[in-house]
Image (cartoon, rainbow, N blue to C red; front, side):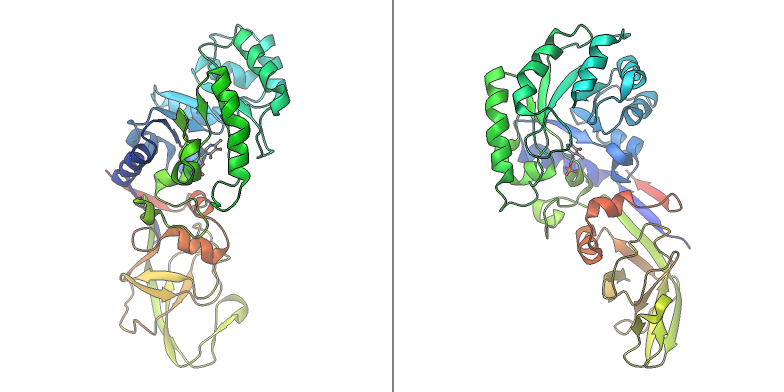
Length: 357
Ligand SMILES: *Cc1c(COP(=O)(O)O)cnc(C)c1O
């Protein structure tokens, strides 16, 4: 009776194709960090064989892909942390982002099994990782000269506000970054999903789509569907109970919601223990038998209640969709004050996955 996450690998392939259509001149590095945004890294990697490379956040995530037999280029977006990780990256042919000066020192010092490919990351406004622009040239030359670095050094930066098309931060970041990449004649990568969809100037030689591959829009108030994307994950469950309560009765923990009239209520087998957001307020839509019904009262660990006044004939066992096909994850995220990324990553190990090819 527990909830399931249905994963449509065809939708993943379709969304990769959309990336290709939207950024036709760019190679595609499919971002499958954080267990492919909760979708399952190995199954996502298997479905995304048509990508030009993969990207993960951490060395460990790259090693898992290598050990599963994936041979494609894999970029570690945070780079390596210390000598042991650098060794592991070298042994497993992982490409590293070089994001701070200490990484250069470790690269200079270590004896590695084989040279590593490096992407120099510049901080153009995110102010998280990356070299500041005045230090960029020196870091680039040092990397090029380092015997542990193989192949051409490439250049990357990360866009901080690309999800807001009205914000001029992205234009400023591009104005700082693009002339450097051009004058050095190196391959460059700037665009996350928001860059790909909203900022064509950011496409460069390599794009790095994450969320759009999983079918969701990176934009505030956006819907993946409007960009021709298909949801990959459908989070679903079933109706566990149907009850009638009298006007004025309180529902759920804290009794924050009261029946406005004598009415039927349904209980759905899903809760924050499965990854349904606890902050989703009453009124958040839930798809029952393909029709929307509103959440009523607080989300519990294993259950939620829904107002069945529009579906008085609903029965125990009827199918429920929490997000995915027919109910955009972006909409649920908006209701719960979060983003689709967090919903996807938050599905817990208790949820069983069903995968369709
Ligand atoms: C996660 C990540 C991406 C992908 O971002 P989306 O918004 O999911 O497309 C791209 N680049 C870097 C450096 C990232 O950390």
